[in-house]
Structures are given as C-alpha cells and as structure tokens.
Length: 423
Image (tube, rainbow, N blue to C red; front, side, top):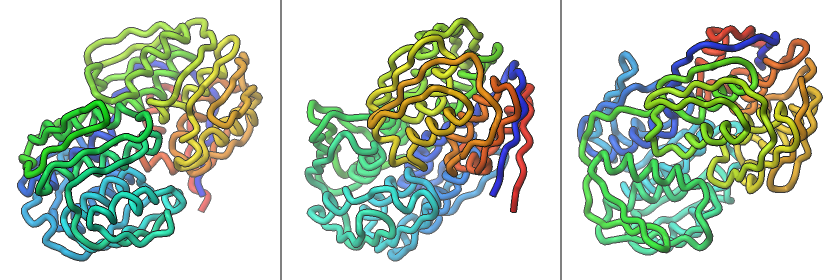
C-alpha cells in the first residue's frame, strides 16, 4: 500500500518527458522479429516495458540495457518452442504477444497479475482457431495457445482495443501468403495503429491501408535497426494540463510530427482557451481563462482522466463522449476519475459512455482512491495543485507501470508530494 500526500503548490518551469511507452513496446517487438541485433534508445524501465522485455527473453532473445540504450539480440528468437509469458499488468504486452508467439509456432501459456486478469481477450478465441491456433481461455487470463498461425482473412471489430490489431500486424508479414485484417465496425484509437505501422516501416516491413482495414503481404522480413524512440505525449499531457490550470510549463522531448494520437492534447488545450506554443520538440502551456468544451474521446482514451481534471477548472460545462472503453482499463476510469474528483468537491456526472463536468474555482483537500491505476493517480496529483488543503492519493506506486519518475519530475517543477510506502 502506497500513497502520495500532496500539498497544494505552483508547478512551473521545464520538464523532459520520458520516451513513449507505446513506441518502446513496438520497437522492442520489431527488433525481436528481426532475428538480428538492434538498439533502441532512449528506453526507461517502467513495469510494462519490463514485461515486454521479459517476454522476448522467454522466447529466446537476449537483451541488455545500459545508459538508457536497450540492445536486443534476436538471433535465437523462437528457439524455445514452449514458453510461459508473464505479461505483468500490461495489456499491450499480452495482446501484442499472442499473435507473435502463434506466428513462431510456440506453445505458450500467458499469465498476468492484478488489473490485467479481468481484461478481455476472448477475441483471440474467435479469430485464431480458424487460422490454425488452438486457444484455451474463458475470455480472460490465463490463456494457452498451441499451433502455428496461418495467413488469411481476419475479421475484427474496430471498437475493441487497437492492441489486438497491432498484435496481428506484427505477426502476419512473416507468414507464407498474404493476409487481410477486415474491420467489421469503425476503428477507434487509429493513432495507435498508425504508430505500429510507422515503427514496422522503420524495421523494413510494409502494411497497406485499404478501404476495409489493412492488407499485409507475406514473406516479408524485419531488418535490424538502431531505433530512436519518441517522447511520450500521453505523459506530457499531465504537465501540459498543469500549465493550463496553474502556471507556465514547458514540456520538452516531444515530437510534433509523432504518429502518437495523444499529441492531440495540444489542440484540445487550445480549444479550452489555454495559451499553447508548439515547437518542433517542445510545447509551452500558459494558463488563461478556460471554458468548457465537448471532447470526443474515441481516438484518445488515455487522455480522459487528465482532461476531466482540466474540465473541472474550466468555466461552464465540459462533455467527454465516446469513452465507454475506459471501463475496461486498469480500472473503470470513468467511475474512478469522477469519484475522485467529486470527493474533492468537483461536479462530475458519470454517463454510460462519458462524463459531464461543471467547472469549479477550486477543489477541497481530502483522500481519494488511485484505484491502482497510474493515469488516475497522476491526474489526481495534478488536480491536487489547485486544492485548498492537502490531498492524499492512494496506490501511488502504480505510476511505475508507465512513468516511474513522475513524482520526481513533479517535485522538480515546484510540486510538494511525499510518496510513502504504507507496508
């Protein structure tokens, strides 16, 4: 049990954001599928990235991290034909590796912990058996697979996690014969798919976008690469929103030309009324009078917790719509963020697929539940800046899932957080 005790303060100055967790996941897997030696930098060992590294090691790769440079030697990838892959609490790791292990013909048991255990994976039991892969699962972990993935046509809903599609995209180019991924409903989180396709292209593999989804030519080869990762727009959003509600903040290390969908945060803050200055590798946000807006979260679900916090300090009404998929993240994020904000005096109404937020001038002190969800914990730590008294956020160590140095950076900007382990 851990908690962060936060004394309200003014955060301002410059902060360098860690590398994108999403980008690092993808680069590690592409490097592992190159069957050669690659480097990836910079890399920061969040818990999710540790899980992905452990999985490629279990499949035969060798890795070494030194000075934030990860070396991947994939010469012996898939040498092990039976494996147990522990995905920790990382949904990305699990959903990426199921098709990858199946492509390698590895008889695999997938296990996980904590919030990953109830997250749905039943779509694999629908689409993989017709392609030669036996699946043993009740729709959640544990999952056992056996057999070798075959090329073909894969029909998949667009309104499920894009991670399922990314896993297929990684695996299908290495099969004999061409494949098609056919969407049976409109795609959500398209930015994450575009990121996958971009990273694959850097390792020499091409994917064709079609009117119905994607066409993937078979018999392609990943090429070893020295890959440079992007800064994480999802994490940058926390301090950018802090700049909008508190004091001028510059976030460094982000690439405005990134394929990350969450770079949309800059435009959303402009719509709120914040003063946003965008440069090639940094964004500066200054506070201004904020006014409520409507936000379609279909393509940017990870931004919802911090956008809810921003809306809580905006004049008028902010509506967040098309966010129903947040109910099956590390927590039910619509419930988690609304409960936490309301406990501090905000006015948030939870809807089946979103939130309605009436702006307030400030929040009260108190204790709120982090719900073992890194994005809830970080969002409420930003909200605590504008409280009238101390705020305690539980499950503070959940930040290790994605941004282990969050509170270090928070305090460097002038924040006053004390993170303690309750034992």
